[in-house]
Length: 274
Image 1 (spheres, rainbow, N blue to C red):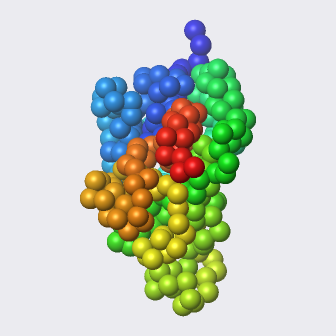
Image 2 (cartoon, one colour):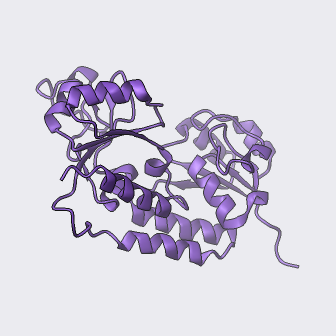
C-alpha cells in the first residue's frame, strides 16, 4: 500500500482546476466560492469562503496536508494567519508562462501525481512564440479589467504574458500605475509614488483612444463586462474589434494556460486589422 493521498484545500480557482486535472477531484477537501471549475464536479467540494476573505478557522479545521494560496489573489492577512498557525501553505505568484510551467511541475511533485504529459504539453505551447507568417506585426491589444474607473495591466503580469504568447502586444506595456487616483487618470499631474504595486494602471477613455489599440478584449472577470460596455467602446474607438471573452483564458495559470494560448491566438487572428 502506498502513502496516504494528500488532502488539499485550494484557495485559488485556477489551482483548484489544476489539482483536479493532475490528481483528481478526490484530493480536494475545500475550495473557495470562486472555484467553479470543473463544472459538474467541483460543486461537491465544500467552500471555505471567498478568495480575499476566507474562513481561516474553517480551513484549519479541515486539517489539510496542503493549502494552495496565491500572493496576489488571496488576502494577505488571512494567509499570514494560516502560516502563523503552522498550516502547510504553498504560496504561488506566476507572472509568466515560464512561471506557470514551473508551478505545474512543483504542484505535480507536491501531489505525487506524475503528470509529466500535461506539463510537457504546456511547455510545448510556450516554445511556440513566433508570430504567424502572414501577420506583418503584432496587433496592439487593450484589456480593461475594471470599470469606473477603467483599469488594466502592464507588462509585468501573467495576463500580459498570455497576450504576448498569443501574438499580441499589450497596448499598456510600460504604463505604470500612478498614485493618487487623480495622477493615474491624468499623466501630467504627478510622478509615481514608490513602494506600491504599479502593475495595474487606471485610465480614462481619452488615454485608451490615444493608445489606438487594434483590438480590445473585454473579459468577464474580475469585472463582468457585457454588451453595453462593448457598444460603448466600439463607439469611442470607431471600430468593431471589441469583443467579449472568458477572463479565465487570460488570468488562469496552470493546466488551462496551454489551451488558452491556442484560443487567444485564434481570437486575435480572427480580429486581425491587416
